[in-house]
Length: 198
Image 1 (spheres, rainbow, N blue to C red):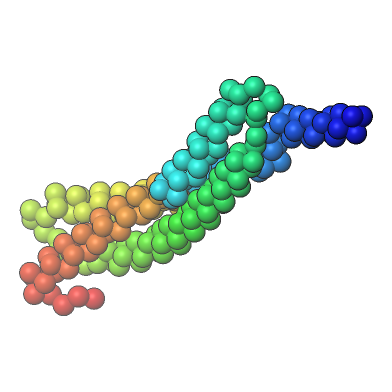
Image 2: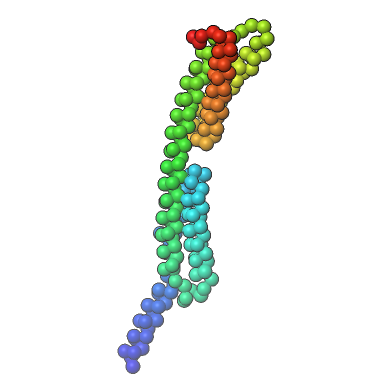
C-alpha cells in the first residue's frame, strides 16, 4: 500500500516537473539573436529574410499556444524544435544577405572604376571637340554633363564608404551612362568634321 502510494507520488512529481518546464530560453535567445543579425542585410536577401521571419512567426505562435494552456499541460518540445529551425533560417538569411552585399559592393567598385576611365577619355576628347560658330551651347551642355559625372562619382564613393552599396551603385551607374553618352557625342562630332582623333 505504502509502496503504491510512493510510486504514485514519484510518477506525479515527474509529470508535474515536466509539465511545468520553462520555455527553452537558450534556444529562444539564439533564434532572436540570429534574426536580429539577419535583419542587418535583409534588403540584400529579402526572400531568405522573409523565410526567417516566417519561421520565427511559427515559433511565436507555438509559444503563445503553450502559454494559453494550464501550466500542468504545457510542453515546450515543439517550441525547442521550432526555435532551432528559426535560428537555422535566420543564419541562412544572414549568409545570403552578406554574400549579396559583398557582390554588390565589388560590382559597384568596379563600375566606379569604369566610370572614372570613361570620364577621363571623355574629358580628353572634349578638348578636341569641334569649336566654332553655333557650337557654344552644345559645348556648354557637354561640359555640364561632365561636371555631373564628377558629382555622381563623388557621391558614389561617399556612399560606398558608408556601405550604402545600392545607393552607390545608382550614382556610379548614372556617372557611367552619362560619361559614355558624352564620349560618344564628341566622337561623332569629331568624325563629322572629318578630323582624325588625337
